[in-house]
Image (cartoon, rainbow, N blue to C red):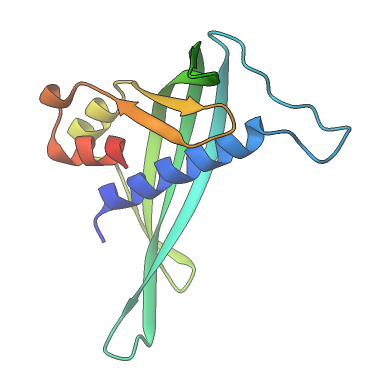
Length: 152
């Protein structure tokens, strides 16, 4: 599995985690995140993806991705009676590690060109307490791998 595919999984996980944090909590003592224009939240994620090798899947290996994700609330608009939020997403310091049986084998530095393109922020629109509706980024300036990551 190529490392940029793992980053796509990370983005999906970060959006789901952010949506979960924004929704109302069942614990009355826990504070709910509220929309404040230009507010920013930073999350640190580590995601492990394991794959199976061999005809009988007797061996497994995988990758761990660690990155910082900044999500900034940009604006809110009403669309057909529903609040729709526009968020800016920045990914910082992505690191990839190859693991075998839970042990770290190699640390892979991220390709500098990929990291430079990835550092350009992109935006997504999301219904309040709902799914991501749209991902916005300049498609003509970036490699197909970056475009695939941001679409994911």
